[in-house]
Amino acid sequence: MTAPISVAPGAPPPVADERGAILDVTDLTVMFPTERGAIRPVHDVTFSVEHGQTLGIVGESGSGKSVSLRALLGLVPSPGRIESGHIRFEGRELVGATAAELRAMRGRDIGMIFQDPMASLNPVLTVGDQLTEVIRVKLGLGRRAATDRAVELFERVGIHPASTRLRSYPHQFSGGMAQRVMIAIAVATRPRLLLADEPTTALDVSVQDQVLDLLEDLRREEGMSMIIVSHDIGIIARTCDAVAVMYAGRLLERGTVDQVLRRPRHPYTRMLLATVPSLKPNVDGTRLTSIAGQLPDLATLTMGCPFAPRCAQALPSCSTLDLTLDQPTDAHVSACPVA
Amino acid sequence: MTAQADYGAARVRWIRLARFPVGSRALAVGLTIVLGMALLSLLAPWLPIPDPLKQDIKNRLQPPSIGHLFGTDNLGRDMLSRVIYAGQVDLLLGFVTATCSMVIGMTLGAFAGFYRGKRETLIMRTVDVLLALPFLVLVISILAIVGPGLSGVYIGIIAVSWVIYTRITCAEMIQLRERQFILAARTLAFSDRRIIFRHALPNLVRPNLAWYMSDIVLNILALTSLSYLGLGVQPPTPEWGALISGGQTFLLKAWWISTLPGLVVVIVGVGFVLIGEWVTEHIGGEGVARA
Image 1 (spheres, chains in turn blue, cyan):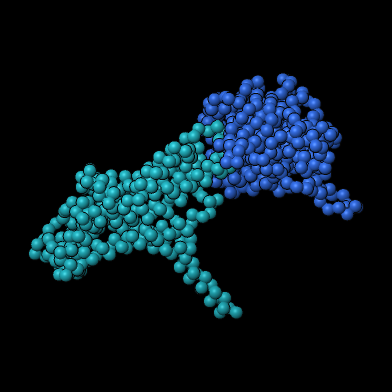
Image 2: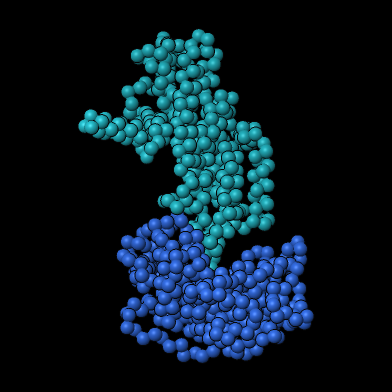
C-alpha cells in the first residue's frame, strides 16, 4: 500500500480483478433536527459504486449531493446525523462504526477533494508541509522519504518544478494548480475510493478539462473508484460510468451514463438535460431553458415525489408515491410512475 | 525638461528615505524606542553609568546636569542609571507575562472554539467573570493570596490577562472551524490535537498579536501601578513605578525624580503602541501570511 505511484507513462493500468461494488449505499437517510421539525437533506438514497468505475451524482444546489458525500465519511455537520440506512465500503458497515474505525478509513481508504481548492488549503502552511504531513501521518514515512514521495506526487499531478513548488504557499498558486495540489494530497495515501465534490466548479473552463483528465488518468492508473458530485451534466457525461440524479434529498433516477443521459426516464432528468445550453444556432428563437419554480422547502416535505409541484406530467397519485429505489444496482431505474 | 527630471529624481529619493521601512515611519519610530530601551537595559552593566544602588548623600537631590543627566534622588543615587536598570525589570515582566498569557489564552480559546458545547461554556463563562472585574483589583486580590513582590505580580498578571486572548481566539476559532481547509484536514482524519495546534492555531496568531503589543504595555503599567502602591517591586530595586512613587514626596523640591521616569514610561508605551498599530493594520491580508 505504501508503494510509490508509478510514474512510468507506459505502465499498464492495474486491472480491477474484484468484480462488484466497492461501495454500497442502501436507504441512506440523513436527518437534521430543526425548530420547524426534522429536515432530511438525504432521504432513502440507494446507490453503489463498482470497482474501478466513476459514479456521478447530479442535482441542483441544495439537493443533498454534498451532504451524501460527507455522510460517507462520517462527517455529517452537527447537529445532523445518519438516521437510517447502510453504507458498506468493501463489505464493512460504516453506519454505526466507531469514531476510531471511521478515522482509520478516512484519508486512507477514502480520499476527498472539494469545490474551492484555495479554501481547502491552509493559508499559513506551505503546500509541501501540507502534503508531506499527510504522507508522514497516514503512511508513517520519515521526513526524507515523505519529501521524495511529495516530489513524485507533484510531478505526477503536473506541478513543475516540483521541489521548488513544494515550498510555495497556497496563495502563490492559481485555482487550477491549487486543485492539483489538493488532488496530490487526496491520492497521496492511494485511497481506493475518491470523493470529488464539485471538483471543477470554481475553476476556469479552460482548466476544468485538464483537471478532469488528470482525475481520470489517476483513477485508471491507481484502479481507484470515484464519486463525482456536480451540477454540470457535461462533466458527468465525460467522466462517469454511472449517474444518480438527486432532487430535494431524494434519488429520482439511476443508471449508466448512456441510459440516463440518452434515454432519461424521469421528467426531472429530462428537464435538467433540456437546460444544458447548446452552441447550435438558435432557430426557434428560444433563449436559455429553465425549470419553473424552485426547490421545495425540506421542512414541509412529507410524502410522495418532491418534484411533483414543478412537474408538467404530475398525477394526483404523485403526492403519495413511494420513492424507494432498491432494485438491483445495475438497472436503469426511475422513481417516476409515468415514465 | 532636464531640470524637471532632476527635480523628480530628487523627490523620489527623498520619499524613499522617508518611507523606511515598507512605508511605515511609525513602525520605525516604535521599533527604535522599544529596541533602544531594551538594548540600553540589557547592556546596562557595561554602560558608563554609576551603580544604581550607590548612595552619595553629599550629592542628593541634584537637578539634571552633565554629570547626572536625570539628576539624583534623595539618597544621591543617579536617576539615569536607576531608570535604565529599571527597564530590565519592567520590560522582562511585560514580555514574559504577555507571552505566557497568550500561550495559555490561545490554547484555552482554541479548545473552546473548536469543541463548542460544554467546554466552550465553561471556559468562556470563566472569561466573562474575570472580565467583569477590574484588572488591577483582581491582580491585587491574587497578590493578597500569594504575597507582594515581583513573583506575586507575575502570577497575578498571568492569572488574569489570559482572558482577552481566549476571547479573541475562541471567536476566531468558531469561524475557522467551518472553513474548508479544516474540513479537509478532518476528511484526512487527522487527530483533533493536530488540527487545533498545527492547522488552526497558526491562523489565529495574528489577531492575537495586535493585542499582544498592547498587553505588554498594560502589564508594565500594572507593575508600575502595583509598585507605586508598594505591592510590586520592593526597594531598593529600581523599577519605573517605584521610582515615580519614591520621588513623590520631593515633587515640589525635585521634580525630576518622579517626572523623568514617568516620561520614560510614556515614551516606551508610545513605542509599543506604534508597533501595535502597524501590526493591526497589516493583519488583513491572510493570503500573504508567513506565520
